[in-house]
Length: 261
Image (tube, rainbow, N blue to C red; front, side):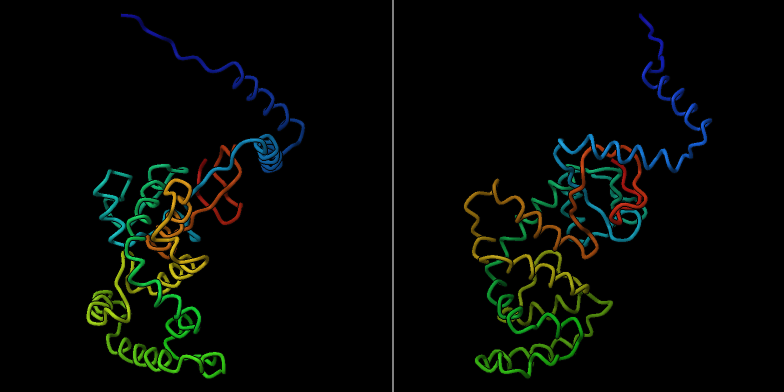
Protein backbone atom coordinates (compact mmCIF):
# COMPACT_ATOMS: atom_id res chain seq x y z
CA UNK A 1 0.00 0.00 0.00
CA UNK A 2 1.48 3.26 -1.07
CA UNK A 3 0.86 6.65 0.40
CA UNK A 4 1.02 9.99 -1.30
CA UNK A 5 1.95 13.32 0.13
CA UNK A 6 -0.09 16.36 -0.83
CA UNK A 7 2.02 19.36 -1.71
CA UNK A 8 1.05 22.83 -2.83
CA UNK A 9 1.55 23.78 -6.44
CA UNK A 10 4.79 25.68 -7.13
CA UNK A 11 2.75 28.06 -9.26
CA UNK A 12 0.37 28.69 -6.35
CA UNK A 13 3.30 29.36 -4.02
CA UNK A 14 4.73 31.82 -6.54
CA UNK A 15 1.34 33.51 -6.74
CA UNK A 16 1.16 33.85 -2.96
CA UNK A 17 4.62 35.44 -2.87
CA UNK A 18 3.72 37.82 -5.70
CA UNK A 19 0.47 38.78 -3.98
CA UNK A 20 2.24 39.46 -0.68
CA UNK A 21 4.82 41.62 -2.46
CA UNK A 22 2.13 43.68 -4.22
CA UNK A 23 0.29 44.25 -0.94
CA UNK A 24 3.55 45.36 0.69
CA UNK A 25 3.99 47.85 -2.15
CA UNK A 26 0.71 49.54 -1.24
CA UNK A 27 -1.78 47.85 -3.54
CA UNK A 28 -5.14 46.90 -2.02
CA UNK A 29 -7.10 43.69 -2.28
CA UNK A 30 -9.84 45.61 -4.09
CA UNK A 31 -7.50 47.00 -6.74
CA UNK A 32 -5.86 43.61 -7.25
CA UNK A 33 -9.25 41.94 -7.56
CA UNK A 34 -10.27 44.45 -10.22
CA UNK A 35 -6.99 43.96 -12.06
CA UNK A 36 -7.34 40.17 -11.88
CA UNK A 37 -10.92 40.29 -13.13
CA UNK A 38 -9.90 42.43 -16.09
CA UNK A 39 -6.99 40.10 -16.80
CA UNK A 40 -9.21 37.01 -16.70
CA UNK A 41 -11.83 38.63 -18.92
CA UNK A 42 -9.17 39.61 -21.43
CA UNK A 43 -7.67 36.11 -21.48
CA UNK A 44 -11.11 34.53 -21.83
CA UNK A 45 -12.14 36.48 -24.94
CA UNK A 46 -11.06 33.56 -27.09
CA UNK A 47 -13.05 31.04 -25.06
CA UNK A 48 -16.72 30.17 -25.65
CA UNK A 49 -19.18 31.93 -23.33
CA UNK A 50 -20.77 30.12 -20.40
CA UNK A 51 -24.52 29.70 -19.96
CA UNK A 52 -25.73 30.26 -16.43
CA UNK A 53 -29.06 30.37 -14.67
CA UNK A 54 -29.60 33.15 -12.18
CA UNK A 55 -32.25 35.02 -10.30
CA UNK A 56 -32.61 38.78 -10.51
CA UNK A 57 -32.66 38.66 -6.69
CA UNK A 58 -29.96 37.06 -4.55
CA UNK A 59 -29.20 33.37 -4.20
CA UNK A 60 -31.05 30.70 -6.14
CA UNK A 61 -34.41 30.87 -7.81
CA UNK A 62 -37.94 29.63 -7.21
CA UNK A 63 -39.40 26.98 -9.50
CA UNK A 64 -42.96 26.22 -10.41
CA UNK A 65 -44.16 23.12 -8.57
CA UNK A 66 -44.73 21.22 -11.82
CA UNK A 67 -41.17 21.96 -12.86
CA UNK A 68 -39.98 20.62 -9.49
CA UNK A 69 -41.93 17.41 -10.01
CA UNK A 70 -40.29 17.02 -13.39
CA UNK A 71 -36.80 17.60 -12.03
CA UNK A 72 -37.32 15.14 -9.20
CA UNK A 73 -38.63 12.57 -11.66
CA UNK A 74 -35.44 12.54 -13.72
CA UNK A 75 -32.64 13.06 -11.22
CA UNK A 76 -31.48 14.72 -8.03
CA UNK A 77 -30.31 18.21 -8.87
CA UNK A 78 -29.77 19.83 -5.51
CA UNK A 79 -33.36 20.62 -4.57
CA UNK A 80 -33.38 22.19 -1.12
CA UNK A 81 -34.81 19.83 1.55
CA UNK A 82 -36.28 22.83 3.38
CA UNK A 83 -38.14 24.10 0.33
CA UNK A 84 -38.61 21.72 -2.56
CA UNK A 85 -39.34 24.59 -4.94
CA UNK A 86 -35.93 26.17 -4.36
CA UNK A 87 -32.79 25.32 -6.29
CA UNK A 88 -29.45 27.00 -5.66
CA UNK A 89 -26.90 26.28 -8.41
CA UNK A 90 -23.29 26.79 -7.25
CA UNK A 91 -22.12 27.24 -10.85
CA UNK A 92 -23.30 26.90 -14.44
CA UNK A 93 -25.03 23.54 -14.09
CA UNK A 94 -25.43 21.63 -17.39
CA UNK A 95 -27.89 19.23 -15.74
CA UNK A 96 -30.38 21.93 -14.82
CA UNK A 97 -30.05 23.60 -18.23
CA UNK A 98 -30.63 20.25 -19.93
CA UNK A 99 -33.64 19.61 -17.70
CA UNK A 100 -35.16 23.00 -18.46
CA UNK A 101 -34.57 22.46 -22.18
CA UNK A 102 -36.34 19.12 -22.03
CA UNK A 103 -39.13 20.65 -19.96
CA UNK A 104 -39.53 23.28 -22.66
CA UNK A 105 -39.76 20.56 -25.29
CA UNK A 106 -42.52 18.83 -23.33
CA UNK A 107 -44.32 22.13 -22.76
CA UNK A 108 -44.18 22.85 -26.49
CA UNK A 109 -46.46 19.85 -27.04
CA UNK A 110 -49.23 22.01 -25.54
CA UNK A 111 -48.69 24.88 -27.95
CA UNK A 112 -51.24 23.90 -30.61
CA UNK A 113 -53.93 24.48 -28.01
CA UNK A 114 -52.81 27.97 -27.00
CA UNK A 115 -50.97 29.41 -30.00
CA UNK A 116 -53.87 31.12 -31.73
CA UNK A 117 -55.30 32.53 -28.51
CA UNK A 118 -51.86 33.82 -27.54
CA UNK A 119 -51.41 35.46 -30.95
CA UNK A 120 -54.71 37.30 -30.65
CA UNK A 121 -53.99 38.22 -27.04
CA UNK A 122 -50.74 39.90 -27.96
CA UNK A 123 -52.22 41.62 -31.00
CA UNK A 124 -54.90 43.23 -28.84
CA UNK A 125 -52.66 44.06 -25.92
CA UNK A 126 -54.56 41.57 -23.78
CA UNK A 127 -51.48 40.79 -21.71
CA UNK A 128 -51.61 44.32 -20.29
CA UNK A 129 -55.26 43.92 -19.44
CA UNK A 130 -54.49 40.71 -17.58
CA UNK A 131 -51.50 42.18 -15.82
CA UNK A 132 -53.33 45.26 -14.65
CA UNK A 133 -56.59 43.46 -13.95
CA UNK A 134 -58.55 45.93 -16.06
CA UNK A 135 -59.00 47.02 -19.65
CA UNK A 136 -56.47 49.55 -20.87
CA UNK A 137 -56.90 52.38 -23.32
CA UNK A 138 -55.64 50.31 -26.27
CA UNK A 139 -58.93 48.45 -26.25
CA UNK A 140 -60.82 51.56 -27.24
CA UNK A 141 -58.62 52.50 -30.20
CA UNK A 142 -59.44 51.93 -33.84
CA UNK A 143 -56.92 49.15 -34.23
CA UNK A 144 -59.21 46.59 -32.60
CA UNK A 145 -62.50 47.40 -34.35
CA UNK A 146 -61.73 44.78 -37.01
CA UNK A 147 -62.27 42.08 -34.37
CA UNK A 148 -65.41 43.08 -32.45
CA UNK A 149 -66.23 39.47 -31.58
CA UNK A 150 -62.76 38.91 -30.17
CA UNK A 151 -63.02 42.05 -28.09
CA UNK A 152 -66.40 40.93 -26.75
CA UNK A 153 -65.07 37.46 -25.93
CA UNK A 154 -61.97 38.90 -24.28
CA UNK A 155 -64.06 41.20 -22.12
CA UNK A 156 -66.21 38.26 -21.06
CA UNK A 157 -63.10 36.22 -20.37
CA UNK A 158 -61.66 38.90 -18.10
CA UNK A 159 -64.93 39.30 -16.23
CA UNK A 160 -65.26 35.55 -15.75
CA UNK A 161 -61.64 35.12 -14.70
CA UNK A 162 -61.95 37.86 -12.09
CA UNK A 163 -64.62 35.86 -10.27
CA UNK A 164 -62.10 33.16 -9.47
CA UNK A 165 -59.91 35.49 -7.35
CA UNK A 166 -56.73 33.88 -8.61
CA UNK A 167 -54.29 35.84 -6.45
CA UNK A 168 -52.83 33.50 -3.86
CA UNK A 169 -54.83 30.52 -5.08
CA UNK A 170 -53.42 28.93 -8.25
CA UNK A 171 -55.95 26.12 -8.08
CA UNK A 172 -58.74 28.56 -8.86
CA UNK A 173 -57.19 29.59 -12.13
CA UNK A 174 -56.60 25.95 -13.06
CA UNK A 175 -60.31 25.37 -12.46
CA UNK A 176 -61.10 28.31 -14.68
CA UNK A 177 -58.84 27.01 -17.44
CA UNK A 178 -60.50 23.60 -17.30
CA UNK A 179 -63.98 25.11 -17.49
CA UNK A 180 -63.01 27.34 -20.42
CA UNK A 181 -60.99 25.08 -22.73
CA UNK A 182 -61.93 27.02 -25.85
CA UNK A 183 -60.66 30.29 -24.41
CA UNK A 184 -57.57 29.27 -22.52
CA UNK A 185 -55.69 26.02 -22.12
CA UNK A 186 -53.75 25.15 -18.99
CA UNK A 187 -50.12 24.33 -19.75
CA UNK A 188 -47.12 23.35 -17.58
CA UNK A 189 -45.85 26.20 -15.47
CA UNK A 190 -49.11 28.17 -15.39
CA UNK A 191 -49.85 29.19 -11.81
CA UNK A 192 -51.15 32.24 -10.01
CA UNK A 193 -48.06 34.16 -11.18
CA UNK A 194 -49.83 35.08 -14.39
CA UNK A 195 -47.02 37.20 -15.74
CA UNK A 196 -45.31 33.89 -16.41
CA UNK A 197 -47.86 33.33 -19.15
CA UNK A 198 -46.91 36.60 -20.79
CA UNK A 199 -43.23 35.66 -20.83
CA UNK A 200 -44.37 32.47 -22.48
CA UNK A 201 -46.43 34.48 -24.96
CA UNK A 202 -43.49 36.62 -25.94
CA UNK A 203 -41.37 33.52 -26.49
CA UNK A 204 -44.11 31.85 -28.46
CA UNK A 205 -44.87 34.78 -30.73
CA UNK A 206 -41.40 36.06 -31.49
CA UNK A 207 -41.42 34.21 -34.80
CA UNK A 208 -43.81 31.93 -36.62
CA UNK A 209 -45.60 30.09 -33.84
CA UNK A 210 -45.82 26.90 -35.91
CA UNK A 211 -42.08 26.44 -35.48
CA UNK A 212 -42.49 26.10 -31.74
CA UNK A 213 -44.52 22.93 -31.84
CA UNK A 214 -43.31 21.57 -35.17
CA UNK A 215 -39.56 22.28 -35.08
CA UNK A 216 -37.71 20.84 -38.08
CA UNK A 217 -34.55 20.07 -36.12
CA UNK A 218 -34.75 19.51 -32.34
CA UNK A 219 -30.99 19.92 -31.95
CA UNK A 220 -30.81 23.15 -33.90
CA UNK A 221 -33.91 24.49 -32.15
CA UNK A 222 -32.62 23.74 -28.66
CA UNK A 223 -32.64 27.47 -27.93
CA UNK A 224 -36.37 27.60 -28.57
CA UNK A 225 -36.96 24.87 -26.02
CA UNK A 226 -34.66 26.60 -23.53
CA UNK A 227 -36.65 29.81 -23.86
CA UNK A 228 -39.98 28.04 -23.44
CA UNK A 229 -38.62 26.04 -20.50
CA UNK A 230 -37.35 29.17 -18.78
CA UNK A 231 -40.70 30.90 -19.31
CA UNK A 232 -42.63 27.94 -17.91
CA UNK A 233 -40.28 27.08 -15.07
CA UNK A 234 -40.64 30.29 -13.12
CA UNK A 235 -41.01 34.03 -13.44
CA UNK A 236 -37.74 34.85 -11.67
CA UNK A 237 -35.47 32.45 -13.55
CA UNK A 238 -33.24 33.73 -16.36
CA UNK A 239 -30.84 32.10 -18.77
CA UNK A 240 -27.79 34.30 -19.22
CA UNK A 241 -24.54 34.07 -21.18
CA UNK A 242 -21.42 35.41 -19.49
CA UNK A 243 -17.76 35.46 -20.53
CA UNK A 244 -15.81 32.31 -19.83
CA UNK A 245 -12.92 32.26 -17.41
CA UNK A 246 -14.35 33.92 -14.31
CA UNK A 247 -13.04 31.97 -11.33
CA UNK A 248 -14.40 33.77 -8.30
CA UNK A 249 -17.72 34.87 -6.91
CA UNK A 250 -19.03 37.82 -8.86
CA UNK A 251 -20.44 40.53 -6.63
CA UNK A 252 -21.01 43.41 -9.02
CA UNK A 253 -21.45 42.04 -12.51
CA UNK A 254 -24.77 42.26 -14.36
CA UNK A 255 -26.75 41.37 -11.26
CA UNK A 256 -25.27 37.88 -10.99
CA UNK A 257 -24.70 38.13 -7.26
CA UNK A 258 -23.56 34.99 -5.54
CA UNK A 259 -22.96 32.96 -8.69
CA UNK A 260 -19.59 31.24 -8.83
CA UNK A 261 -17.86 30.05 -12.00
